Length: 110
Image (cartoon, rainbow, N blue to C red; front, side, top):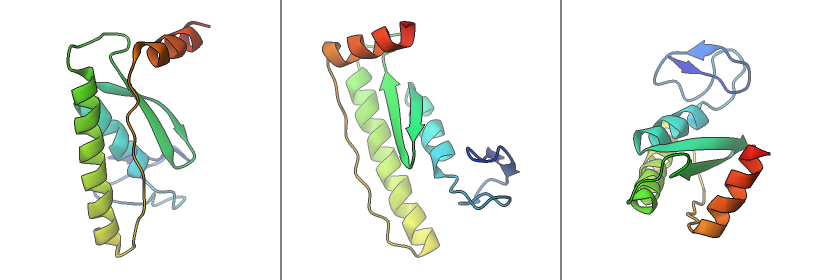
């Protein structure tokens, strides 16, 4: 079962939209993909998601894990568009580096 980020109600697996409020359920799938690759979704911002890898536990291959998660998310969004017969457009990006991570850690500890 997938839990809707908007209303909190559960919808059966395979549903693209919440049966109660109609909100898209894709963010929940994005969370599962990110976690499967060892990351954590830090926040959803409208229809965008920001995930972190290597916090709080760093791995030698965190950048590779992030890229693999993005590749899987892109595949899933493409498939979702085909399932719904709706052309989806989306962008993905990966930022790396100690400065960005340090800034994020400072904001989490505040």
